[in-house]
Structures are given as structure tokens and as C-alpha cells.
Image (cartoon, rainbow, N blue to C red):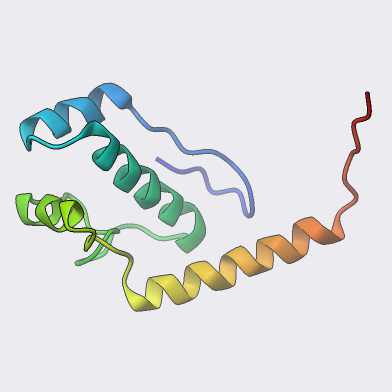
Length: 104
């Protein structure tokens, strides 16, 4: 689940559940972990719930996991456009804020 802080925050990934799902579908846990992480980061940047198709769909079906193994479980084109805009806005905000410099 993602927190709702603009341009920051955290996501929670439950590795035990990821391993369980990977086992259920006979998948590499790394594949499932990567897609779950992308999905949760999508929540942070899209600021919305689930979609009817693509990476932001929930729950994922066996067909979705098959698409994931082929590299085809992706964000939809409108989601990609929104994510790019949100990422660019966050980058502008962070580059305009003073940053701390740590020297040794």
C-alpha cells in the first residue's frame, strides 16, 4: 500500500506474500517482486486506485502473470503519460529545494 505524500513517502512490500504468490504460479519471486514494486510505485505517482487492465489492475489473474513472464504486464499509455508528468514535477520540486551536503 502506498502513502499519499506528494513527491515522497514509502511503499510496503510483503515478501512472504510475494513468495507465496510466486510459488502458486510457479514464477521466480524476483519477477513477482518487480511487478508488485512497480504497481505500488504506480499508486504513488498516479494517485489512484486500481485499473481494469495493465499493471495497475487488481487482482492479477493467471493471464496477467503469464503476460508478466513475457514482459507484457505494463502500465497503460495514459498511466505512462501521467507518471512521466508526476515524476518531472517532483524532479522540479526537489531540484529547487536546498539540499544537504555531507562531507567527510
